[in-house]
Image (cartoon, rainbow, N blue to C red; front, side):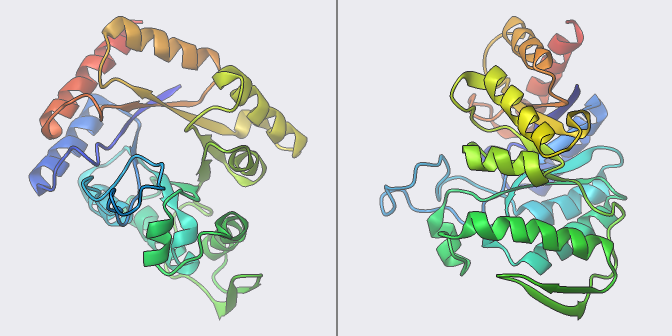
Length: 289
């Protein structure tokens, strides 16, 4: 089980030195991957009370792929994971190009987590349809994989057309791994059917043991090898004790997940140094298991 961290988007601040110090500290601690969440715009809470997601205008977000271009230059080893890019609110060919560039600049260290999101206000501002996002998503995955592996692509889909065109440079990984995040059953089925892995959010009915078992069964039903399918779970270390963290990690390990990603946001930590220090404490606790 590989250990990673969630970049504390909403709490790290906009200071360049802090972003750099955090990324370098995480890599020096030996974590194997770094997740970052994706939001382009935050909606004003009082004007959009129908939104159920947690993030609004008051929450700061670094743009995820620009951030990874910077982190690619200041790190050497750690895997960079989008957790997750909201693909249907972005232009597909441009997303493929940006991801390929990050993969080139990081020497093949990108894992592209994708999802369909929940913020219709953001979709509206970016000029994309919120209603058909699930249906467009699968065509997006098909197209970006072709763009990453073929120098010249001809593609005619329901929502996309590419006529004898391609990316240059192609990514180092051909294709870049695509992991799918979500909480609805449709999203989990989609991950099992077309994803290289699944990034957990909320479980289905029956809790996490039943959810993980069901996802792997869907992988098998699709004729795919569950041993080649990754599962990346998040675990909060924002509060609690070392014993709490050890028990939670062992519970996840028992479910057979491949990656465990530690979250420090939401515990009142202020600034990059505090987040890095909490990760040191958590790593020490888990290493003593």
